[in-house]
Amino acid sequence: MKDWQIVLQLIRFRPGLFGITILFATLGQLAQQAPALVTREFFNFLTDSAPVRFDLWALVALLAASGLAEIVVRFGVSWTRATFQFTVMALMRLNVFRHVLNQPGARPMPTSPGESISRFGGDLDEIGMFFRLLEMLVGHFIASLVAVYIMVSINPIIAVVAFMPLLLVALIANLTHQRVQHYRRVRRRAAARVVGFVAETFGAAQSVKVAGREEPVIREFQRLNEVRRVAALKDRVFEEVQRSTYYNAVNIGTGIVLILSASAMREGSFTLGDFALFVFYLERMTQFMRMFGFSLSRYKQIGISIDRVEWLLGGAPRQIMVEHNPVWLDGKLPGIPKVSVDEDDRLHALEIEGLSYQHPGSQNGIDNINLRLERGTFTVVTGRIGAGKTTLLRTLQGLLPPDRGEIRWNGEPVEHLAEFFVPPHTAYTPQVPRLFSDPLRDNILMGIPEKDADVPEAIRSAVMERDLKELDEGLDTLVGPRGVRLSGGQMQRTAASRMFVREPELLIFDDLSSALDVETERRLWNRVFSRDGATCLAVSHRKAALRRADQIIVMKDGSIHAQGRLEDLLQHCSEMQRLWEGNFSEDARKGNGAAPQPATTT
Image (cartoon, rainbow, N blue to C red; front, side):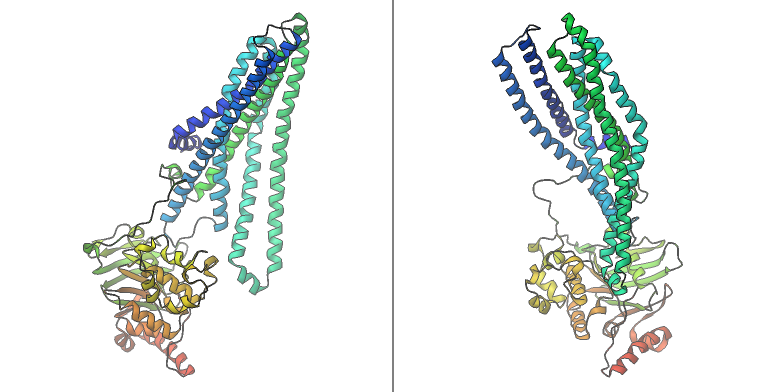
């Protein structure tokens, strides 16, 4: 899809609103001509150089009326223009963001988070601003046609010669658009690097402080800002040179009119009012030509912005950006309904057959995984670091796209894993839960109406009731960016509460108990399996989980090395024996016989 097709598709999204905006923009430009026409009549009245159709007070009334009309039109165009601009920007952001969210969740975005925000923000703003220019350009064009007609009807020779400097403006705009495009591309790239660096620095602030690398980070930040300053300066200087050329074209045109009008005024075919009107129209025509050239350069610039936003699509077709979908800029936002599983869709058995995935550019992943989970059972996946445990959970849920294999829910093949393995079928807590800088309540509900959710029961199941009492504002406590005001265990149990409140058929945990003490972990598992028909798939090294498991999957080098109950594996599986003995020896040194907390699995 070409750039102009994207622009046209966005106009088609709200054609009526765009048309009304064009109408207001045109009326606004015509309203600005009214004072010039009244001024022409006023000068002719003073000099008595031409018949006057209105008396003095009528001219004053017309001048006041034109001013009031312009105020009304400006109000209308401001409202419709802003509404259309923000509507198309919201549509593009919605479509791109939806596409990003529909991609495998464990795959990284093609750009850093900071640069992605720059593309979502600055680049889409550029596209939205182009429509503002386009509407003004159409209004200027129609008003310019009226101006040309009036000027030619007064004196065609002076009108044609006066337009010559305007052709120079158009030529300059055409010759310099590539240079404008280059400077704007460099400026946007430099700005994106600064934004990306800031985002990454804040994300790794603790690592920077621990390593004592504050000074090098500051120097790099200063260097990136200097590059950005130079790029912005070049872009702005070139733009101002263009603008100066455009404005000087008005002065040149005015000089030409002065020279040519002298003899015409002596002959009486050109009045002082005509001269004043010509000077006004020359400025308006120059503004139109300048806007035309500026619009051409901005059209090239939005091509760059579209390319940068397209990069976020990861190779998907461009038309995804402009698909027509509902956007909500006013009124009440649509609610998020609580989805319930039909009785026929409740989990009875989950079968995994030949599931394989290999990470791009490496030999790591999982290979030929065969597994069956029955309703009401607890399956624990264990193994050394790098054995493929987390990859298995992610591939199962479509967070990573499987290379091959089949997954069946109650005997029926699941075609679209990422769409199916979500609440209420499944819910997932990763190794590092993501919390938002919102109240604890909102982090648990995540849009579900509180009246449709049993928040107290979810908190109780996650063993958070005591922690909740210690928080100053309870469920209304702001957790801070990424949940920094909570401990590691509180973050994981908040994420677990988020799972429980959705009442899924299958609970999937990735090392949930790694940040929990032994007693809290024991209570958590007891409460999980006190739920009727609870089915759980978890990655864990902890003995409390291994002892409770109905089935243990021992992973090694991306494959299932062994599976069965704990007693059988401890007798016949050397890998399980090493994992168990490594934890048990650590317990012996502590002298309490309890399982230690292992390192987080990968």
